[in-house]
Length: 180
Image (cartoon, rainbow, N blue to C red):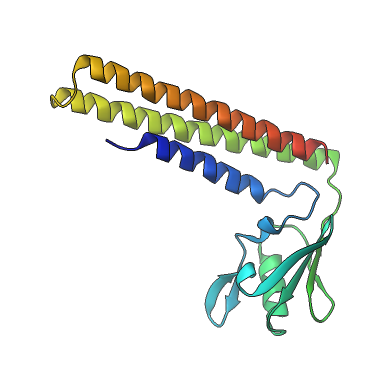
């Protein structure tokens, strides 16, 4: 039997991870998580080559452990979809986040809702696969009709729980974006 609960939880974890990379006008070191820097020929996360700190609400400071990494970090940030131009003071790379415009907030809210819908589709697909697996077990004689009905009911309960959690995460992130 596939562990549908675990798979549904992964869908939510992926959604939360996606949301952590959406910037809400405040500096959040997690927006750098997906950016890779060329470190001696190996793609490495920025946190793997530098300390990242938040000295002010809308400023990220990246302090590379090796001075020659400043150029590599700047190049990686410019190549990313972050939309921020890095500055450097010779020792650190500095990212200043502008205030979000009302239009950009609405755009981000739409994007958040879309990602939430994609997560719901993923959870529903897992439900479908789990129900098919239960039906196959019934046909193979591994489960009785009653056991099948009970298992399908449990799968639906889990689906409802995770869909509600997705709605809650989406609402929370939307509120964060709109009230910054």
